[in-house]
Length: 294
Image (cartoon, rainbow, N blue to C red; front, side, top):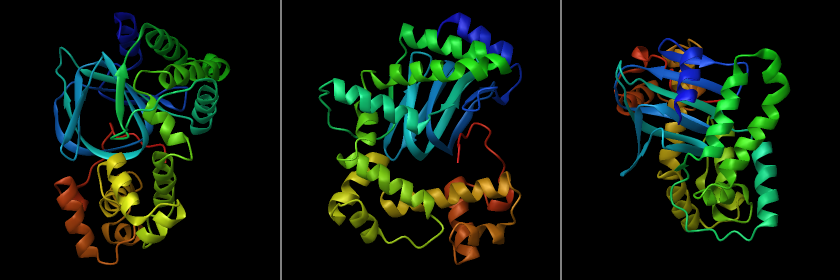
């Protein structure tokens, strides 16, 4: 990212923390401290790093993203992140939630007009290079984000341009697959929506696979390829991330939270929570870098 964008972001966010803007889907995050690997949850968003570096971990895979490349997370994905930052070079990033309807319209339009040769997909999350066109869009988006009037009038056109730039990126084939209903990735995307809708219930994996017209073996294979987790592992992480949100943001009591996210045993909930986050639920604190629009 160029210096002008970094300076503009710095003028908007002077202190460490997460700052909202007049564009609901756009937030800016800054920290001057290193953060060790910890579980975080991101929901269908773009991450543009202006300064510093972050390393994401999914199962045995890891990926770095910095000012040279942006991250695309086309589904709700719990993963672990390590942040590298100092007082001299803080970690600053722009978090943008993606409007599903708008992105879908763009991808459908592109897919009809182009004969795209999709590569074999692996993980859903991917990164792509920051181009001059994307820098231009990001700068204009940041510039209007501090004005209520300009944001209201101009945000749709600028966001639509940004989504288009993302959708035609070199590695955007996975994003297209997630939106095309007849692909295995599109079917997994549908299953993920069902999980997030009914995560409190006892989900039957066999019925879930059948609902998206996949065999059990194919469902498990593609689910793990897309998310890096088995369906049961993913459901557990969804419940635990929701639980943390209820405790830290909505001030639910631990016992109340356990039943809210589908646990029948309070003690099992506490054990799973501690194993995942590294501390018991009563010691949970909000992760301001965590980004969820749900």
